[in-house]
Amino acid sequence: MPEISNTKQRLTIRIGRSTLSFSRPTEDGTDVVFEPYVVKSGVSIAANLREAFKNSELLMDHPPRVRVVIDTDVLMVPVEHFDEKQMEAMYFHAFPQKEQVAIFFNVLPDLNSVAVFSMNKDLKLVIDDHFQDVNIVTAMSAVWRHLHQRSFTGNRNKLYGYFHEKRLEIFSFTQNRFKFFNSFDASRAHDSLYFLLYVWKQLQLEPEHDELHIVGEIPDQEWLMNELKKFLQNAYIINPAADFNRHPVTAIKSMPYDLQALFIKGR
Image (cartoon, rainbow, N blue to C red; front, side, top):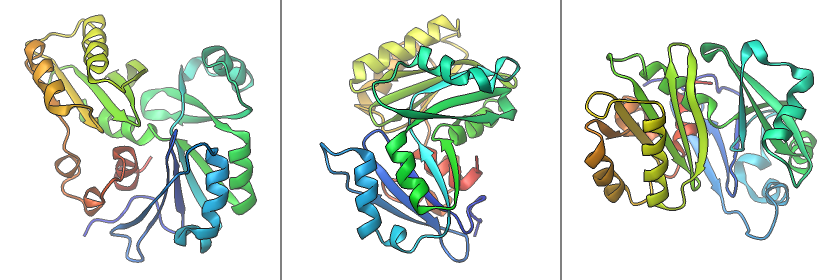
């Protein structure tokens, strides 16, 4: 059985825009215990997490180390232009905030980029109150890393779309850099179709030759694929089980693709 990547002795908390989940590898390191948490609407994620420590089995007996995977707006900066002293000003210019947030960054050496992102300060306080060793990563980091490696297969340019929590992340790579990255509202399939085709045209990809790969919680999947294939010859849906060689983690119901990539491939 394949082992889980870089996860031993560390709890993983995934914080979505309106979701929470807790994960931990099994004793033999071949599978993951995954516990989605039912978030109360009208209550902040910080308050939900604080309440979860009272009734979640994984949180009530947690190790001192935690990896926090957060789904939030990301500012991508080329590594040669990144200045830690300027990152807050750059982030707030790109994403004006209505709440108090702390700013973090992940270096992506394979892509010569730095991902700058935020976390609500109340949420950070809850995490710091319960853990001694905290590692915070953007949810997209494992997806970028894995699909960047996939982009080298064959001789066709590839455009990727990842659907999650009514958002669509569209990205493409050129060698060891991002060629394009942006995030869009994906609550409607018609809008998603427009965004995918618009980016395809913007990047001057070839409908008869290049490839589009989409994955995740795809809205109106059958309709969207039928429409895409009217314009693109090579449009595909990524099947996580096939993508990860039927790793046991892919059989875990409702686990997001980004979390599967993180456990199987590592950050």
